[in-house]
Structures are given as structure tokens and as C-alpha cells.
Length: 303
Image 1 (tube, one colour):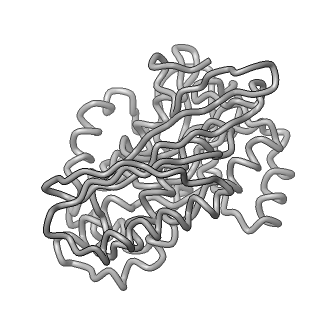
Image 2: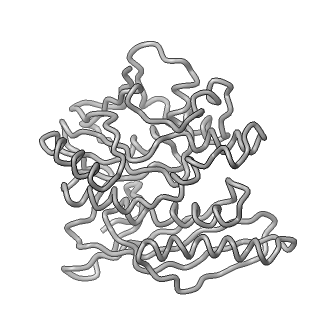
Image 3: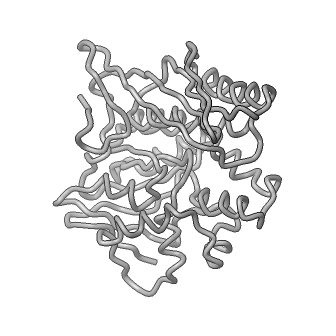
């Protein structure tokens, strides 16, 4: 059902009329100092692609690269964090594979499932749909500040909790209200992943004032504390973005900055707005209304 064409979040194979299997794989180097939190974040990030397709995780395999000088306790903490997130997702960890490498890396290969008719594509939004985001932005900026010793890990409690949070509730809401399109925000930043939701005849307006950011993200953005990926993302995707009004360069760049284990982008029919927001509030799930799809092209940035 979904392969390498279409920039989807995961591959999907229709097993039979009632079951579609969802396949994904993701891993990366540490973005926090704590091995335990690194394991939780990396696992949540890997599981997110299953949720972004409208599915539920079933099984997972560890992918682990470790330097020869890393302590066994640190390795145990990474795997402990990952296992906790797999269990929280209601899935089973069946093993995995490890090898020696110069730099630690960790993540999961995950298999999930859904009904074929419940699979959510990233580019199937409709004209007039509302665009919601379910987690704040700014992870790449703040973790870069951590690497540059402008912050301590204790200062990033809210961000770490956000990265560790599963997108399961967001996905359940998207299914319950029959979202027209769904994807998550990760390495290509908000603009990169939002571009995958567009078509030749469909654009989207986003409102900067409505976009949530983690505390101090824009402060460090003003100091140009950005990961390298922000600049490469901007170079690749900037032609699709049109700004209406005057925006500081660093604010625009923040929209291109990579996120880790970010939230979902959900396209919902406007008539479901109140019901969707009310249900999200009942489930203690943040949903930020940041834009609206229109007949046209590109991403229009407004105040």
C-alpha cells in the first residue's frame, strides 16, 4: 500500500482485507547526556512513524551501536529506556542486533498494524481542512544549546518529557475524527514535513503566532543556536515557503530546524473542530491549531 514512493512515514503491506502491516526503522546518536533518557527518546521517535500512519505498534527490534569504551551500565540504561517505551506502547520487544561503532547509536525497527481503511497518508488533506500540531517545536535548537554548554540537561526537563511522550493519544484522536491526513515532525523540521502534505492543487497557510515553541527556543534562535540540519533543510525547502509580512530571519529558520520525536501534524475537517478539541482536552492531549489548507500551492506564513 505504501512503498518508497510518496515520502510516507512508514511502509505498509496489506496482509488481507482486515489487516495492514506497517514497517519502520529509525535510530540516531545521543542528543542528551543521560543514557536512560536517550533510550526512551530514541524508542519514542521510532514508534512515532507507526502512529503517523494511523497504526498501533506490535513488535520491535533493538538497533544498537556501541563504542568499545562505553560502560555496560550505560548500555543497560539505554536498553532499559527503550524497553519501557515499547511496553508503554503495548508492543513486544523481540530482540535486536548490536555492533561496535565509534559513536553510540540506538533506535528500533518496528512492525505495527491497522485496518487497511484506517491507514493515514501524509498528502490526502482537503481544501478547508484545519492543521493541528500536537507537540511544541524547538527540540533541535535546545539540544544544540545543550551541546554548546549554554544549557544543562536539568534545564531541559520539559523538552525531554516531550520527546519521550508517545504519539499514541494523538493518533487515536486522528482516527476517531477521521483525519484526512497525518504525519509527524522530525528531522526535516515543520516546513519539510508540512511540504509532504501538499499537492500541486493544495497549499496551506500557517500562523507563526499560533505555533507553539518550547521555552527559550526562540531566545536561542535569536542567538543563532541552530543544528546544522536547520540550514540544509532551509536550503532544500525554502522555495515552497512564502512569507506574508516581515519575519525575523531566525524565526523563519526555526521552522526549518530539525525536531526529534516531534508531534503529529493532523488535517481535520473544520466541522469537527470543536469536537476534536474537546476530546483532546478530555484526554489531556495538546492540540495546537496552526493553519488551514487552501486551494493553491505552497506554504504561506502569516503572523
